[in-house]
Image (cartoon, rainbow, N blue to C red; front, side):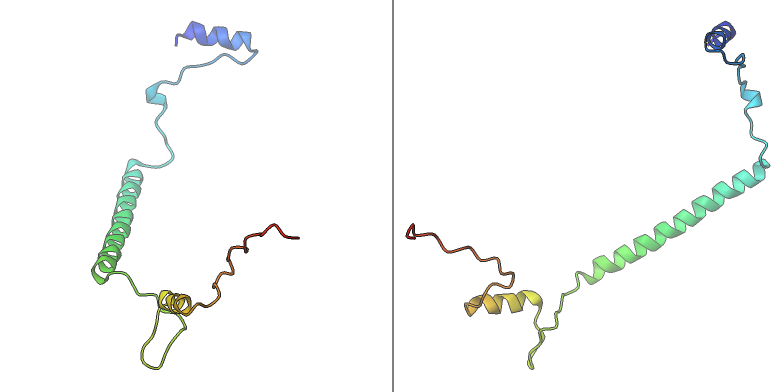
Amino acid sequence: MSTETCQARSRSSNLPPATLLRTSDAISTAGPGEQVLASIILFIVIYALIFLVWITVLNRKIKTGPEEEMSEVETKEHKRSWIDAATALAAHGAVSMTDAQAAPPETGKE
């Protein structure tokens, strides 16, 4: 964008005259370059360590496999999971554990 275009825009919008920002003027003076480099390096090191911890935990979980869910349902012989308890209830014709039984069909008699 040319300087004339910036000045024309600022006149039409009642803004102060726009000045161009040169690359040499855009350098931050907030801190020395060594501090910026050190913060970038520390950022990379910290996230690399977090990544390594994540990979280690993930590898351990993959090697051990899924955990079996055990519920509070136990017999004297062995522990049973919640799915075994639900299967045993269904096999004996027990009432639904969720009470989500279908309503009996209407016969049309009133």
